[in-house]
Length: 456
Image (cartoon, rainbow, N blue to C red; front, side, top):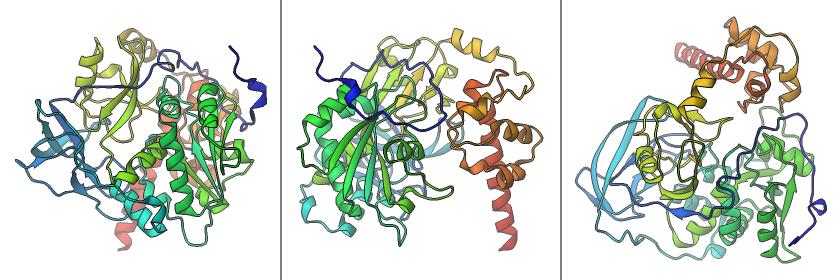
């Protein structure tokens, strides 16, 4: 039965970009299911942008599900909450997805406990001031759940002189394979709308636009059915294209507004938030709750039971794979999607707040990728046509190959690259351009730190 005509919806977009195979059919129609609690949870103290959290518990201490176990390490930081009732086993170094170990709270869950959420308190959000909302959002430990993991409360306090008039809620989820945001828009629509109203109140914005790609029109229909005709919240669908979910691309597609280089969205009157983060905000703030779990899409050719799962923060990947069926090794795993995700260094790496997907490849696919030969650049221009930021990846790649990293930043706008991977995706020579750019940025940051240290 046809419920609506897709041609009725908004179909604008940004220039350039690519169209990778979506591969969302494996999980797009699968409802969110809850995974069991792992016997041991590993909670990194640094799993968000900014200063690490500071432990407020000690080994041997019993904690209840939802109880704060670490406090924020500053304004650009958030606390941690216990994802399960159990006992603190220790505070020690544990591996991260990228390899280096980081300080973590190890929580041993009580196997016989009901894991009922006991640590909460009702509050009237409507009566709260902007300052109170910002503090309350920080207290939840909420960060950008789309991957960046930037503390949400900081985005609710834009720089002085920046007046936000429009909130953009990013539900595009343009990364192939992932369907976390899609299912949240369908199954947690009420929380998403409630969170949108909270964000609008905190920033004093006039309206909210929930933007999603036109491969998720069922989500558009659900959301629109819950909004009255005079609501300041509207839902718009844009063309399905990667990387439509990037904040600059979304602003261009929805409002034809360009966010200037080196500026925040608030500089042009916008606030941009992720669907998952906004839905969590709507669910947690009224009950003084903390972020203790998140929806994760576990999918790919190497998993037996692909789907969208509610997973406690800190759950080791090894435990998830044991529950869902997997034969392989850590080299076959990607945290996130295939375009911007990172390979996992160990099966013992835990799910963090910013992890919305776990892509499980097969060893045969991985072998095919590793066997690819990198050829010299033929100056075909495909990467220029694909780059959504209108950079020159070809020239940047040639400079990176010669280690001229500072020239890349000064003359070719390296820092405008947000590492979407479009250039690498279309390169016929199989040059790993985005990896070159990451190395260049890291080198420039280290050089800047050395110079600041000398100056002080």
